Length: 110
Image (cartoon, rainbow, N blue to C red; front, side, top):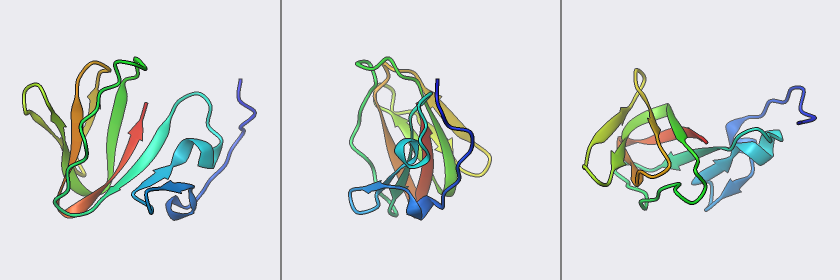
């Protein structure tokens, strides 16, 4: 059971990796029940593909700024991430994130 009662933070004040490309929400807010990170993709960028078959973790993607897609490797299907859309992907499905011309800031929860 977590000792967390409440905590807030500016996104840019969260611990980062890769020169701010990723902001680590879980350690920044002291979460223990689930993982969460914020990815800051530059314009027209695609991340390396990955799946969560090893962890068994489902992932939820929520756009915070910009727009883009979750791209499913097996089918090439693109799940839209914008002001009106979010996406969830199961552990065994390989996926990457891709940004549009304005970039993409996305909250990833697993």
